[in-house]
Image 1: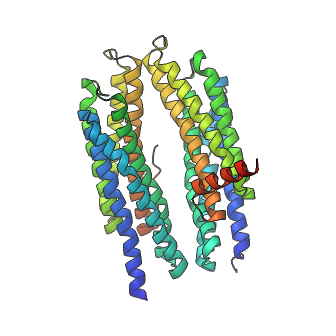
Image 2: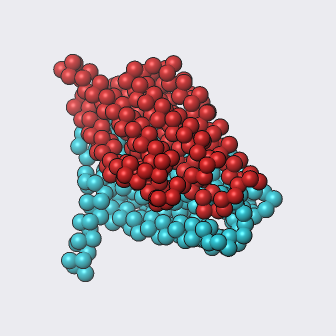
Length: 228
Length: 218
């Protein structure tokens, strides 16, 4: 059987990456529901799921076919290489979401996050899910402007993360060391999830423009301030 | 033409192995900066991280050039794809060493580490550095047996990491929340560093044998 034409394979790659992003969003949403609303069955489902592993293998297969049968060059080659890299970040996002779900399951008997930090985690969870969904749209539409938006979201995540540490380090933290350790790690998982979402979108920027994402972001900012 | 091709493949492996060497050095220095509260050394690790990032870019350009000009197939194609993944992992190892150095700098002139956890970090630093060197060896030699020894080192790292937590959460912990938070994150940095080294070596095993070793517990 003849392999599909290159444009078709590239289309499949962006579709698969989009699905991986959506899957990462689903995992984090479910993990957050487990953590914050005690939806433990949902958290269990997230931990047991292997959808992401299958999608990742799919990306690798399609990328390999593209390289093997079409020996793409220039922009097309960039698209394939960027897809390979992005799939690694996406798999990592899923692992991080699982860690959140696992934390929820470990803490069955009591609420996993103390009341004081619940608003921060609620917001981090919402933002993380939103970022993964944005990354999905970027992967599917190759919209570079939307990709740049994720930088702002990432800053918001960093602020929330810093806020969380503020609460932890406050002398009046009454929940003890074990809870502090949990909160520290959970905060880290969310922060890293967001970092990877940015990297996924950055791969699209690189694939489309052939330039480093930072250069593109600066260029767009300069354009905006010149026209606005 | 064929010779040039082999040279390029070797060049790619060398580039990755060199990255491993740099990442090992970064972690060795970062650990020493942490243990000795050595600000200057911490600053050096922080300043040098960009070198590892540049090495990644250079390695990726090599991979890109190979794909564009040589269109490798079969095992060689797997090698190049795994190199693209590997470059990302090793760069991340550099970032994690950087985070350790940043922690040392943030708390300077105080030490981040209470006495009772110092031995853990000495040991974790040793294992992490050894893992990075070994990953470099595996990339160059494609030796599956060396790759297997990384698994044992990683298990040792996981054990240390677990014990570290039991110290933090134990009844004798007297240093409060702040240091516990620092040490939680530091422990995580070492553990992740080790995981990345193992992942790099596992991909080499996959290239050689066509099979991925069992899943990594991360």
